[in-house]
Length: 422
Image 1: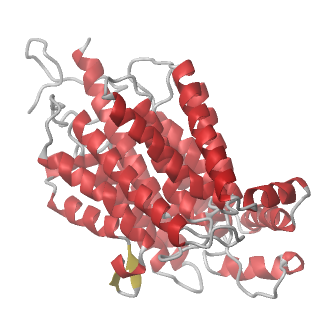
Image 2: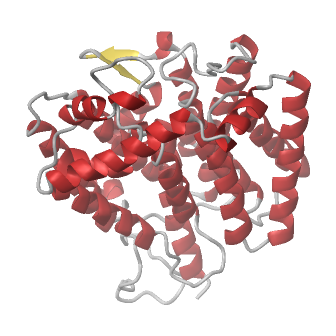
């Protein structure tokens, strides 16, 4: 078994505060490419395939993301020892949540197998991405591959999309609506900026290219009417400014990206941003519907506190209750948020495991050695919560899953680095 420090060999006892298993391999040194780094980079880049229907794999009537398939193959090939590297508390919390999620679906009168399968796929990507990373170099290569994959989506979507209309969707060749793109872009932007701001020495050209990639990936969010994406970008900027130790450098990077965005939006002259901002300030009717959906999901949970109403049945009930808010008569309306939806669909049976998972993620995100900077895991969790307040699809977003996997791997690497310096 690999030791975790350079001290004289002795009993391998880990601190109770250590969130990671003692079987994790020693971080590799050096800047040369490794096979594991190439694998992580390929998995990261594979998110680009989500933007194209022809690259999705049909399995049992489900359209599977390429990154999910590659992650599943990788996880299947990983040995038991490597699986033990994944934080046990987090694995337990994820398993309990998936079990409760599945039970909530089974108790519904209308059972959609696709929902628990999509959640399971999310967890597969988290675990595979985390376990594939064995060094800082692997992590950097993975983030770069991830960034390039989302960059492909951003450039292709902007070039062939209907920029300038309210329904502009960078993922028009894939699946999802105009709000789906930010579920890919936000975690990529977060990781690019955290890589730029992590204080490690890198070539200036490489840093500038990452900085430009972040701006290009962000641009389609503001060219579209995805206001929850705008809020996500603003939240990320605030979290970076508050949570990073290098405040001046962080402010410079955030301001630089903002300037590039301003130039890009004005050059393309779409007018969508201005119109949607004015609608938001004037109490847009869509906002009233979203608020009503958020509140009614919670109210349904109060009415069915133990097991909820069911993941499918609740959508019919929401349509019935909120018919006055609907512009077009509809008998099925999605919850449009993942937070109160869990309580309304599964009651305490689902809400308690969800809360337990959230607390576990937050606790796992604490450094063993106290630092003032916010860890990637905690930053991504807060960013996910903000985005999940506006879409239940955040529960299944593969890009967020990949970003969480990188964050868990980063904490494992940081833990070993901190132990080697003590």
